[in-house]
Image 1 (tube, rainbow, N blue to C red):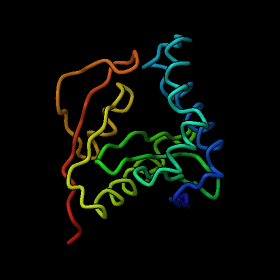
Image 2: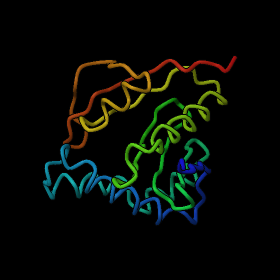
Image 3: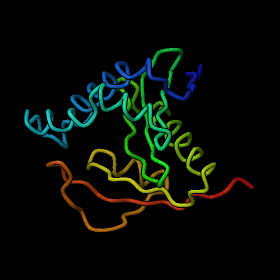
Length: 161
């Protein structure tokens, strides 16, 4: 039986849950990127604190969504109205079950509704193959962002036929 994935817009009440999902994803799913360096982990998590998430949830220029897998929250995504996908995090035990793909589809749909025809993001090394699989391509050379090596990527968004 295939798992049921549901994506829904996040609310202010979800800020703590979102922050916990992101923390777990970063600590365990992105270890290759931060190499268990406590200062890198701390810096990365500080950018995704519940206070930061609450501020984004209150700002209409941002869209946050939550993925439920069989009714359990397992992933989050965030985009801004300028076309940048700011995060897509999935709990490690839910990797390779379609959650990330569903989150990205929802984020890209939100961007299209706003007239954005090109999505952009900064991928860690861990996420590059995933994003390439979804049609994203390198936009520029690798660079540093908050102490992490990232690959700026982009993808044209196609209107539904």
